[in-house]
Length: 491
Ligand SMILES: O=c1ccn([C@@H]2O[C@H](COP(=O)(O)OP(=O)(O)O[C@H]3O[C@H](CO)[C@@H](O)[C@H](O)[C@H]3O)[C@@H](O)[C@H]2O)c(=O)[nH]1
Image (cartoon, rainbow, N blue to C red; front, top):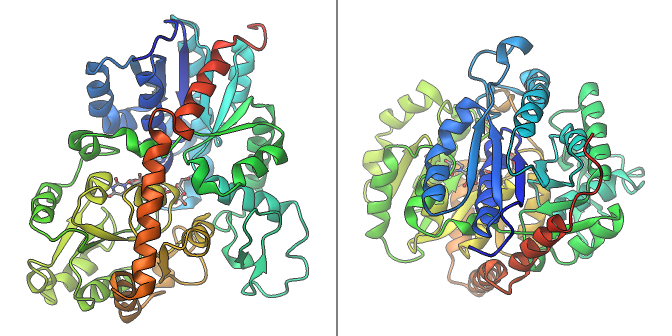
């Protein structure tokens, strides 16, 4: 623990989604381990998921307060308990969900007024735009946390603020994203934001933008060496300090920290870890497609076929509520688990992803390219099979495959609209999946080079988080900035 003055108190307000809250809890632990008092606001359902992690960190001497504020589901017309985006069945309820998030402002401010030491700074998700007003009220700085990578945020910004796609007539025609330190192409269909092009979301986007402009700085869960000049470019673009302080998942050093990160692990998880112990180093493919999209049963069957046909050992994560009885019937009829016994494991529910990816037996990651998963794969020095589904995942895929050159593409060329996965059905066939797995594990020159690049990048990720590393130093800079004192008077 460092020698920060006892009065440095950082307030964290996450978006209630696994891909946002998990890295924010890691961030809380990183700042608390440097001696800052950290308060994180959440709601009862989410607090339940993180209580063990926070209690354990507190036992280790990290001054963390996990504060539960009731989520006003009834008030906004949401079913009770819908407190995280991974529980929402479809984006149709998004407006109500964000409405409920907005109603947390008053109780949070009330709670904050009673805190000692008084808050010194707010670090809040980009989606929590109203916390900009809270920061002004308390006369303290606010830093925006982007749960996505700087590469994708800069790409989205550059496309939006240029006319680069005006002359592109087809949604499927690749065009060059302007102003990127390293060029890459994308199609209109793959641009981030496709899944919610509702008018009210445009208003919401505008508010987030305004709040970012009012902030004192921007934090990314990433590291400078991964971003290839995008940090400097984004800093210049928005005229604000931009700091990479990750990969934050690396703060989970021992297995129990990794095991309980984000949610209670499925009962299949222990069995999986024991099985992994028996497998050859770098031999197993881990397949997990994030927390939000729920693929159609027919698509999941194709994934099962692909994993089965590849002859490669695998761990396959099927999230709760995905596939349902249709998939389960197929698995039974095919005697899937019996057939792959000794070679493959299915985890139903929540997988301890970071613990699994960190296991020496894992040799490849089939991922949807959510930013956290992408980074976690990088940290474990893994080559990846990329299967983006929606949001900015196609941009992350381009980073992994074209810029970092540690991935093999398998996914479809267009996004699935979140909530409409069942309508779309099969996007990727089993034989294509098997082919991509075999290409990834191949011992040919390309495969070897890919593994070598992944190993080098993994090492850079770990170095960034060590004392003297780029992200470690950036955390110190953020703390120095906070200690420099309030920016405005309390009103
Ligand atoms: O069984 C599971 C499933 C997920 N995870 C963890 O959950 C997080 C998932 O985050 P991410 O990989 O980013 O996926 P999503 O939850 O799908 O992420 C959403 O949020 C991200 C951050 O904004 C975006 O990059 C994605 O596009 C968006 O889908 C990661 O830390 C995983 O380790 C587990 O531990 N176990």
